[in-house]
Every structure is written in structure tokens, then in C-alpha cells.
Amino acid sequence: MPKVSQEHSDARRRQIIDAAFQCFARKGFHQTSMRDIYQQAGLSPGAVYHYFDSKDAIIQASFEFDYERSRDLFEAAAASDDPLKALMELLDFFFQGLKGAAELGAGRVNVQGWGEALVNPKPGASLQRFLAYHQDSVARLIRNAQAAGQIDTGLDPIAASQVVLSLYFGLELQKALNPALEIDPYAAAAKALFRRARPIP
Image 1 (cartoon, helix red, strand yellow):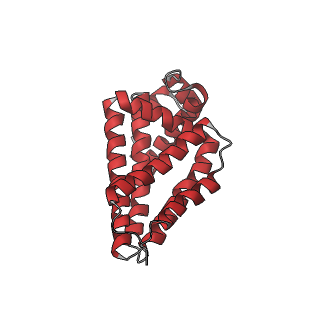
Image 2 (cartoon, rainbow, N blue to C red; image 1 turned 90 degrees about the vertical axis):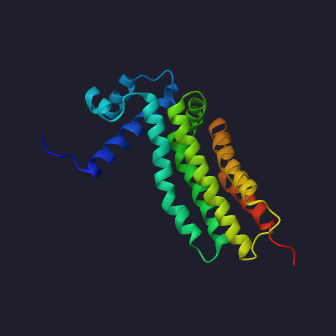
Image 3 (tube, rainbow, N blue to C red; image 1 turned 180 degrees about the vertical axis):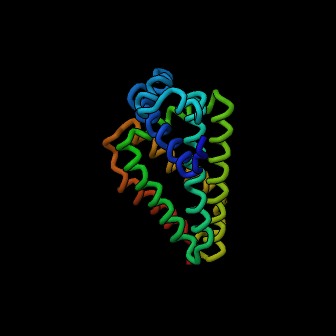
């Protein structure tokens, strides 16, 4: 049997996750069957079960995918000579990314995934690791901005990073509930909050 490349394997996993998200967005997590997913993906049952043994595993993999995709972005931001600008650009990237996600119904699926993570240990552990990494990364950026004199040193970096995550996940939830919500004004207001956190001369 020919050996399957990692690139091929990753692409097939992504194909299945995308198909599952389309089903979850249309029917809901619990109403979607594995049959729905492999039919949506245009794959055989065996091809899907080779990569994922359940819907829970697909949700967990989607969390892992987001985590892996964001690591390089956060590392590049942490290395910036202008940490406040890097933080603003990071917020812009993630807020703008929600536009495309909303068109695919990914926000609706992620909200369902959060609920599943509350009661299911495996996706729950992945989501907790994902959140912890992002909180620590944003807190590091805020500390760098404080050291550069760009943000008030009286601001607690951990608490501030939790606020940043709330801004992002809160927007994703609101967008899922209200698709007409406009992202650009929200993003501008969110960034203005940090501009107001500059040290007073």
C-alpha cells in the first residue's frame, strides 16, 4: 500500500472538518450524523472513520487546528518592536477573520462546540489549552507594551488579556446570533479601549 503523505493526510482531515462544519451549521451538532458528514464530504465511511471516530473527535480537531494556525501569528507579534501596534494588528486579523467564518457558518458551529466542551472531557481539554495559550500570549504582548511605555503599567496583563479574549469570543457569539451585526465598528471600538489605556503624560 502506498504511503500517504502528511500533506495529503492534513488536507483530508481539513476536508472532513469543513464538511462536518457545513452539516453542524445546517442541522446542529446533535442532529448531524456521521453519515451526513461523509456524504457531505463525498467520502466513504471508511475514509472518514480512518481519521475521526466520532463527531466529538471532529470538534476537538477543529480546536486543535485553530490553535496550531494561530501560534505563528502570536509568536511574530511577541517579537515585534512595536507591541501595541502588533496587538492592534492581531485584533484586526482575528476580527476580520470572523467575516469569512460567518459566511461559512463557522461561528454557529463554534458556539455549539463550546457547549459540547463543557460536558465532554476531550474537546473540553483541547479548548482549555487553546484558551490558556491565547491568554498567555496576549498577556505577554501587553507586558511588552507596558515595558515600551505604550500601555499603563497599572493594568493587570492577565485581566486585560481575558478582556481581549472576551471581545473576540463575545463578537463571535453575537455574530452567530445576529448575522447582520457589523464587525468593523465593533473592531474600531475594541481597539479604542486599548488606546485609552496609554499612560497619562
